[in-house]
Image (cartoon, rainbow, N blue to C red; front, side, top):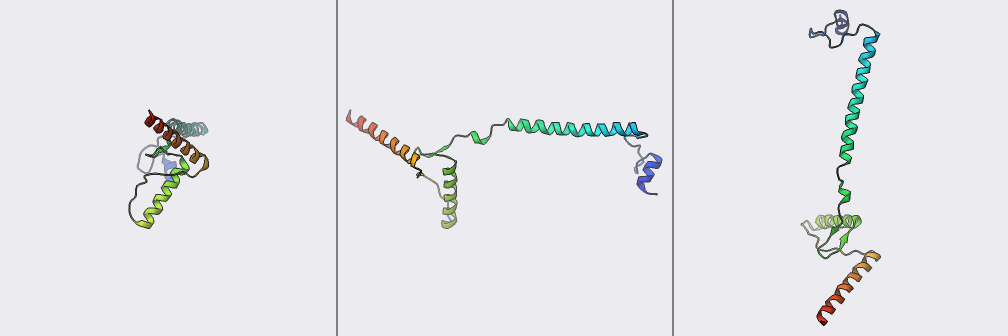
Length: 130
């Protein structure tokens, strides 16, 4: 006799133990199904709570922009360009490198940098004149 049919016939599992839930009529089967469905929803709620808690962790997006030693502030595009340039240098020269300074070529940023340099030069001139 097939194992499945034997389980149905004598109400025992192949290991000889009684089943955890004995289903004798439609009401027992419906209750068992509802408990299984409830268990699935409880697992889904737990997963949703874990994801909600993970969303409250501060993301790396809030980090400030990188600033070079010379005062140049780098945005995400400039950081990507520096990263690509160092990879290409390392690939062609086969040696380690360290980025010391970066010069931005965008018009607005270049004008701001020149204005800062001119302001610093004026301050130095005023200090020397005193």
